[in-house]
Length: 146
Image 1: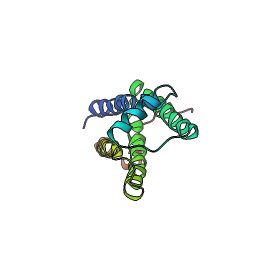
Image 2 (image 1 turned 60 degrees about the vertical axis):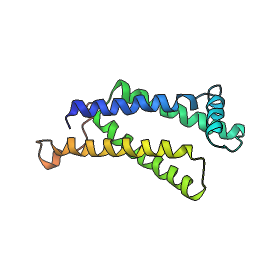
Image 3 (image 1 turned 180 degrees about the horizontal axis):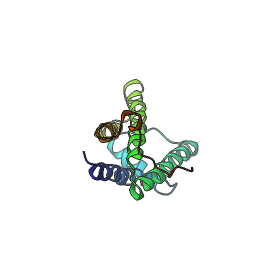
Image 4 (image 1 turned 90 degrees about the vertical axis):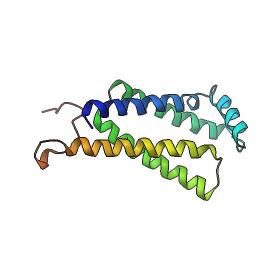
């Protein structure tokens, strides 16, 4: 995979995250999304504290997504792959142990797909480098302060 293609993947994953999580980010949009999910599969009642954590997570994901859309550095794709691996693990835990709403399966599948694509793409991109082994590390995100 070329660096240009990989950057497109990082940007596309950021765009997906904006589309998938924007409604989670505010106290005004989340209840509408909750109603939609409840029509697809029964959802447990949410207290305001639960909704607060949904809104906080949605807000953080939106900011992280905006960064990857604005500046799709390869290292951001690698860290996004790590985050998706964590999200996938927690989603599978709750699906298999606590039998949460089946709606989570769709999110888990996309997390797994984008996480694998970004991780493998990054490792291939770095592995293709012609630099000596000591220099095969994540591309610099910020200029060296020296």
